[in-house]
Image (cartoon, rainbow, N blue to C red):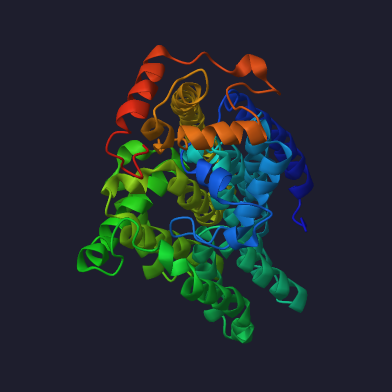
Length: 464
């Protein structure tokens, strides 16, 4: 419920920006198609076979994402990618709405609108906006924020039930849900009156533990042993690098690099030394970001330390950092502006009112640029995907070995032919046929080489 003065006006502006963001994502996503891990949901899962709903995808419990994705496969097929992008874009807009609610309740509508505006056009997380497969990350993010929003209000039984259900849905959607269980647990623990509601996190935690012991542990150790000394030793560097990436994404000041983390940590230390109180919500959000990069460190560090910069992860940590900054900086700017309004120096008053808009403008400019960069990358991916499909289908004459060779980015030609027969061809897009770019000749050449020789040495997370 929006109760602060000005909240309804800010909400109206938010709705306009939300419609603009939805249109922007769909426009930038025109002509894209299925990519990489997405084919695992297409080939290995089925609505008609409940046994395929529970097996992990890498380390993730993905049941909710699998059911949602397969519903699209069974209804839309492979003939258009627009519905897949529409689903992830709608989920993203709802994520921004939850950030608006949380910040509005904490510090007011202006800060809420500023934070939500950055989130709506969050190009630093472009991989989760242009890849339909990422309904897992975005959906779990939305469910987690719903839970934190419920716990950030006056405690009632209905809100506690809502939080528990949202956390359960989140953890059943992707591993991102684990971060929000940790955040919710912190929020309940630090307030003695709320500790009797710890069952809110016990329910999803118990469900995840049962799933993990029964089926989920088979997805652990795909890239390295998580409890190996080298994995544990990587945690501090991943957390530091993660906060660097998150702060850069949230502020548009990525060029400051590690200095941004040191500056933020120093400001926090000064505030704590002066007796500042960290609200349970802010503490929970920071714990969620820390846990995210700690888990990446133990489960994915076998590939490269640069994984902290991958946009799929920055989407989560960066948006949570936007909320933290709004909750922390908003009141400071408000107090500063109130003091300056009593000043006779016009320059001081103008400076006080300009700080917030300048910060938001820098962050928005940075993220809009990354939306363009992300589209360019995904257009290239669409071209190589379609080239591999073209070379997999008749009249291409294949040997038995070539036809059964797994091409990694798409299934083996034999499998692809059956998929096209069952669900239609992704070589065109029936909803936006004009948006599909011609396949690049170099991609066709690479596709022919891969079918004959096999794909090059595969790095599972080779994504910038």
